Length: 165
Image 1 (cartoon, helix red, strand yellow):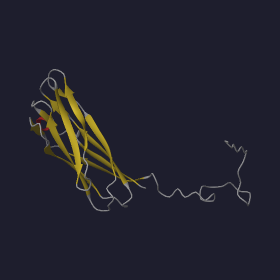
Image 2 (cartoon, one colour; image 1 turned 60 degrees about the horizontal axis):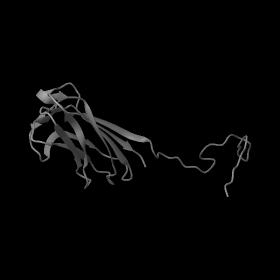
Image 3 (cartoon, rainbow, N blue to C red; image 1 turned 120 degrees about the horizontal axis):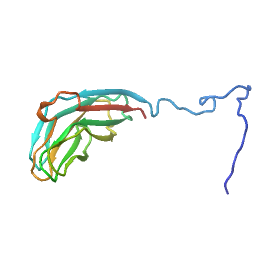
């Protein structure tokens, strides 16, 4: 059986307007952004490896609470040179055992360099420094790169946000 409660107004015992805390609801800081860190990277890396190669794309954040989550967004300009080639990106952390992985670029003909993102959520369970590192690989042995030709236009790096829990 489902119950429905309908009221026009809720008041405190003193007749005032209730707040979340007067109703016993503790919102605290849950879900709020504690800090935002933006780290840019201007060093490129070319590879034809089908195994992951570590890039210089790193970003670090120090959570204020061990129960916080980290929302991370990698921004990069991946480049694929060979038709039917894909660049796979992998983000690993010095605190997490499982990396995040995703396709950064797919080439269906000609050289392609487009802005790309890879988003992840981490629960590092620490108040120590957490560092994220991008690794890349080619799917068919063709050239792939991040920041082709040493581009320094601010299109690469990390946005790291601490979400308080």
